Image (cartoon, rainbow, N blue to C red; front, side, top):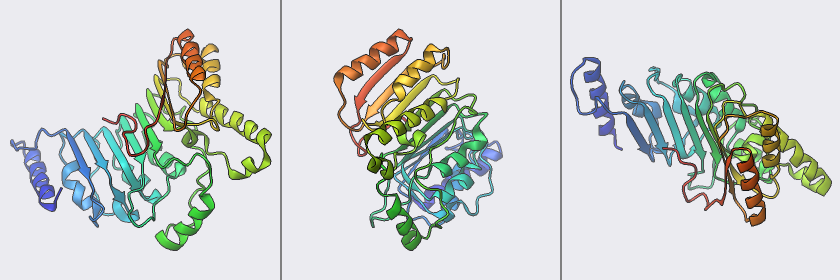
Length: 311
């Protein structure tokens, strides 16, 4: 979209405020793609979000720098669905950005690096969590998937150097290894789709160095952390980037269901990033059926293909 498109939308917003008919006055959905060259991001999108009819805003294949949130004044309380698809966002930009969207019922962030020079911003759990905390009373659907696929913390030490020396992000950024944290405070959340290690934190390399027993214990702790973080309102759970390393949550999930918890849950989807035992898949489906759950197990086709359904 070019700059003239933004001007057209700005004019439409003015006409809308005057209760006059205009071509865009009933527009409910806007998708913006590939605007990395736009220096003042909010100056570009503000004409769009001022349209009171607008309900859904989607950004795709975009890069958002640290200062993208400077300059916007409008609060977009009329927008209820916000998506970032295959987008690379500076960790410091998320919270100030989402503050302008106080009534979201749907938020999706499909992280994927789009930089051509090899420098990318990390997916930082703490930043995403801070950005959505004001939505605990409204959010019904949450999708947080890291398509870069790093289930093991093998690149964390390199990140600190890269971020400090090349992209200018301060070193006080939260370590990549921290888990997302509990979602039990999101009382209306019906749908959750997330990368497994987003909810658990990845298994640190140091644990792998300690041997199989340490890894097994860490897997148990991670599985418990994931299951305990789920709200009782949940109806659909999608776990992405499942591997042999981070398995275990499905059994604890079934146990919790047997104990009378998560009674609203209907659908569980397990998306593997590596081959899995077919017999295990059949067992999950059979056990789920006994508990009134529809369990699907499949392979992820890769980050160049579609992730969760975000429309």
